[in-house]
Length: 477
Image 1: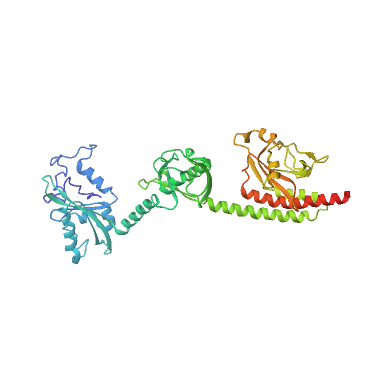
Image 2: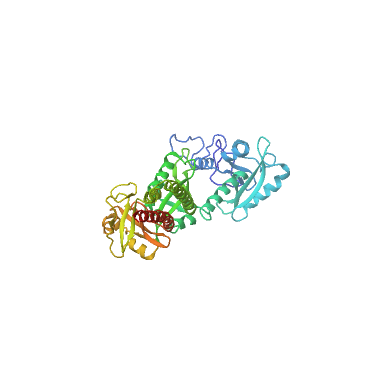
């Protein structure tokens, strides 16, 4: 909002005030007498300050005295309608210049009615631009009272309807995003601390909308916080990335740690009130796609394992020695599944180690050098349990034990083993032995889907072992 730049502004609106400025030879400042000049370098008087404030406003503003004469007209009003302050101030209402004559009486009545009404009145009018075009504006008008408390005039702030609607849409969008959105929205400041968190994001992060504010992201995210903060720093420095990113994070919650995958988009936030963009932070929008990604990973894993079994079968059928076929099957099965495999076969009341991968380094599964050796397993060993139950047994070292080789050494396994899966070897209704798959501590524990795959491998290996035993028995006979 503003005032005529050449005429100054009055401090109050009233029917008796001269809206056209002081008479020639008189200063518009009541503190300066006629014939006196303002002192150069002196601070601005009240009218100059008011003129600067009104002219600097983003909203178009005009004002009328009690008789309906235009007393104020700022720069934004000039921009919207094209009429300058010199052309507008002093006119009686909008009739014949800023509004059609047919609409003038109605517009004047509705505007001036605000002088006696409480609060602000909102109306929409079609006004005329100086070039003859029409523009639909939304006005907010309110009465102005003089020093005696009586109605002295009306001020009217207005803007083009489409601009107002755009603003309302922007506000409505931001409120919807921060309240009811079906994806998480987090606004972080330049220090990467949350300042606004919507309900969806609060649930995803395991807190409330207020308790999460101002906390470092490292307090909420156990693993993956480095990648998240790197993405936020990149947005602050270089702007938003061209495509969403998927981030795997581990969250600390009251129920324990949770592994989640978030499909994330980022927006750099800058203040619209400055000429040069001033970063306010980053808008982070994300959706939880963990279920979909885990399903994709499982499908990829299943395709890979099926391919490996197919290749293993083709290789095994070319082996003349059935035990060579068994170890070839295990070499294919190990890829992406485990770090070590042990083959222990039943010999009377004991298990004997028949084939294994190297204990000290990755390598193929080979028969034990020098012949089979008894496996010195203590009672209750997972391999013995698998044979007794005729089923699969899974076990893992605890978090502390995984860092120490003692857990594996006690079970006669390679020192780096932290997770084990024992699958029984069965053929023609007989238990032939047990397969033991081992993983190091840097890998996840075996899951139920892994057990199903191990049982499939064990069934094929058992067939080859059975054939080897039949063949060796026939040869010996």
